[in-house]
Amino acid sequence: MDSLELLIDLHRDGERQGPGGDAETELALQLAGVDRTAPLRLADIGCGTGASTLLLARLLPNARIMAVDLRPEFLDVLQARARQQGVASAITPCAASMDNLPFADGELDVIWSEGAVYNIGFAKGIAGWRRFLKPGGLLVVSDITWTTAARPADLQRHWQAAYPEIDVASARIALLERHGYAPIGYVVLPPHCWLDHYYRPLQARFDDVLRRHGHSEAARAIVSAVEDEIRLYEAHGSHFGYGMVVARRVS
Image (tube, rainbow, N blue to C red; front, side, top):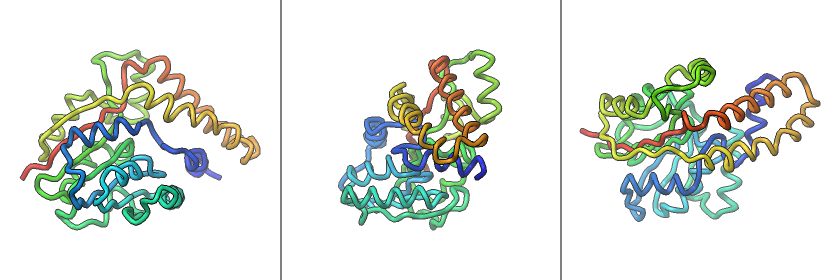
C-alpha cells in the first residue's frame, strides 16, 4: 500500500480530516449572513467524511448540498453518517476533483470548503470556483495561513516546502479582491480546532493503523510524519493557523 492509501486509511475513520469545529463553521455561516430558511444550492468542496457537510445540513434545513470529494471512501462514510443523523435526503455525494467540478455557471448560492483548497492552491481554487457562483453568491474557504509577520526558521522551511502558497491573511484578502470577490469576514481557527478536534483523535488511531498494516515501514513513516507535524504545531502554533475567509461574488 502506498503512502497516499495509508493516509486515507488513517483519516477514513476520523470525524475530520483537518482542523475545524462546529462552532467555527456556524460562526462563518453567521458572518456570511446566510438566510437559513432559503432553498439554497450549496457545494461543500473537499468535504472528506462530512463534518461540515452534516452540520450545514442540520443548520440549513431547506438547502440542497452537494458533497464533493475525490475519495469515494470518504463519501461512503459521509453517507452512512448522514443516514444516522436523518439528513441523507439533503445531501448528494459527488466523487470529483476540486479542479474539475461538475457544476454549471451560476448554479450555486454558496461554495464551502474547509481545510481542502491547499490541494490545488488558494488562488487557483477561488479563481476557478467563482464562475459556479451566482452573482452575490457566497464563498467560505479555510486555508493554512501565517498569523505573524516573522516565523522561526524551521517552521518557515517546513511550510514553504509543504505548501509554498502559504501567506498572511492580508495577502489572502487581496487575492479575493483581485479575483472578483468582496471580503465579508476572516476568522483564525483557535487551538482546540487543531488539538481537540483533529490531532488528538488522529493520535488515538495510530496504534490501530500500525496494527492493520503489520507495523510496516511505510505505515511507521506515515505515523512519524504526522507526529512531527503535531510537534511543530505544539511548538509554533502561535505563528500559523487555518484562516477562514468569507466573501461574496461581485458582478
